[in-house]
Image (cartoon, rainbow, N blue to C red; front, side, top):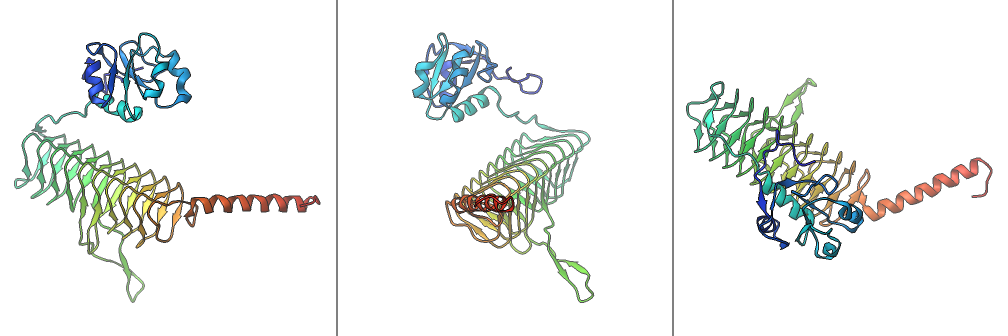
Length: 347
């Protein structure tokens, strides 16, 4: 079925011409034909737009009732009779843009809820929405059109660019945010990093964490993820980066643009990641190492040293993917050989 209108208001109907323009594609059909929403091939009806990006789904395409389908040129001959087509270079990207056309992010509803607490010297630019029980600290600065959800906290001195959104219970302190940054529920930004020294009596003493967090434009940070502020230098998250839920990023980490950090990954203090690095789920990176541009770190990998640009690594300790698979093959053969020897069979 299409998106539930109780949760996802729809900006339809939209003409095929508008849909093709949003997808950066070419319309095959009546450009004035109108559609009401988006849906999967299986669930779509005559008023819906769907997509196909691979031949393995041809059976679904041939059986769909969708009124329009976003698809690559090579699959256009398989379009069912009566369905309009939108030909694009990347069907998944095209569908993403069309889904956003029908379901744009909610705009700010300007105003301050009566239960919110806003410091007298906080600066709120035009069009900000401050939700129930939200807190805006002293000397904080919010750009135009920011949305601060219920119970969210913007700490003293924090600066946020225009169009930022803090979902309920998100908290940010000791930080400077660019434009269009999104913090999902429960995200924690700018808290004290994990720095300690053992005193002569064996007791831990906390090292003051005197840096901040700098977050670039269009960064999204998932629910219950934590980014520590720097100790002496700043923690930096590059523009366009996407951080999934339940991620930990330690103090002084420097991350380039367009990185992807997936759920339950952990990056230790002072690690440096280049541009477009991917860190898969549950991977762990030791501190003070460097990961080169476009490197990819596999799920549950344990990274103990530097990673060269463009390399895929797997395992713990992490190693290049080809070496990892060769190692696994050798271990599997050794295990089988050992098992045969114990049963008296020839190895």
